[in-house]
Image (cartoon, rainbow, N blue to C red):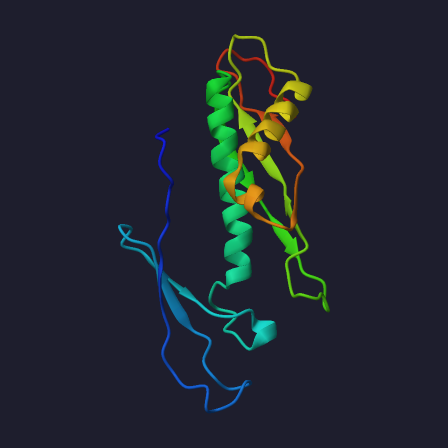
Length: 168
């Protein structure tokens, strides 16, 4: 890595009127981040008057934590010469009804990591769990949050081309 700071920029766009009052103004907006051409169509959480058909900032926070854990784990696994062939995560977050200040209190990541079944000895579950924790410590997003980020991994083995049985 270089010795300079990293910066991240986004462009958010909203137009409408709040003159119609809190319960009626449009929460729909867009966010983009050049040079990526994709634009995200966002809204507020439906609980707060947003469009449930659009992503909301709270979901993006959970997605960022999940994505960062994935990318950190893949880097750690590659450095450890462990062949990861699939990774899924059904992440959730909780926000208490009346927190002061309003905030996400906890993000739960539940990655299911599928590893290649090679002729090399399999890493132990303790080793894999340790690598998940190393990845968690290296995750920029988790390190930036006040919310607890809890990672509970499950490890699976892909079917072996040599006929060895795959297991969880």
